Image 1: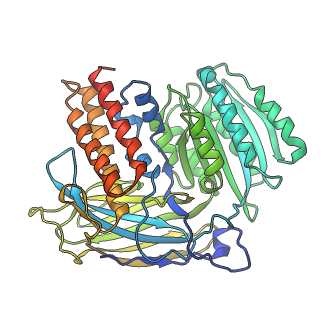
Image 2: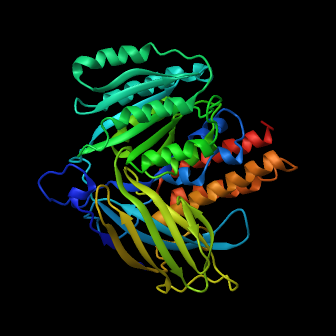
Length: 478
């Protein structure tokens, strides 16, 4: 069993537009997801093209953020609600069962009535020579983006190759100017080196002239393969820039594109407060990101979520997913920089060792207790509360496992997929024989297929196809 803590985030503090002064939404079907990496699109592109990713080409966090993992409980009647789920199940890369503690995020915002803040937006576009083959997809994405803007939104456009150029000064996006903006985008050409530092600096500078206006969200959107070779080229140079503007509440959304992509730098930048990152691997993905998710990706619900979790003596942390950090022994301090409004009910998950006895906690027993706090957008104080986490197994589980919620059971299956992929790809690139990790992939594929049927969740079936394709690629020596 579990006890869900529901916390109130005031309408005024969230900076959202609501139907009526001070009103609070009742049950709806939106959730919240941690910022950072939002998908494993780059790894999917490599696998679907017949290749084998390297371990740094994808993060389990991104895999979790692609999926909906709602927890059971009372409907969320606030802007942001936190729940917990717990369960025990196998891990395919070893012989032991583990505990899985899910921190789930829900929102009571009604999608039919939600309106995002107006935007002060700078779009920064990599037009270097390495983007020649990707420029058509970027232009397609930009047109989808323009379709989401209104005359209340302010837009600046910067392009960069060896040098940065202001394609469009900060401008309110009126209908009269939209045709001119679209024509300017269609004229973009690729060539030259990659001075990402200068392009980002010019984009941020364009934002500062109008930053901080009430009811307006300030954000830089960067389209790039993240392969800088002029000016700054590593995270030690880029992170201070992104963090400095994040401290001014200027967020970053990074859109990765292309086979020659730098996923590790993109992932690092997306961990900063107010940041997220998406990989655009197809026209379908472009349409999904901009036509369905645009308003949500620019809407932070909470910053600097901190949880202090005291686990029972039997449990200890073996892994942490979709968090910026998780440190401690006997207790855990978890930090999540940003939670964004989302079509999915997101999850952060702790993988827990069960101790020397390897026995799962008794039904209803106390797994741990947690204190949490987070910062509301535009609010002076913090939201704080505490929560008890209790074991529950009524939702069943794969191969004798048991979980309190179907959402936590699904999260455990996805973590198994990610762990199997990480280990199989590591073996392929580092060990002999290269196909020694295939049994892990096959075990994860079997688990996902079984869980898709048991949970009646067809969203897991493409993951089975992905693992089977990776097995084929490894066996072919791709």
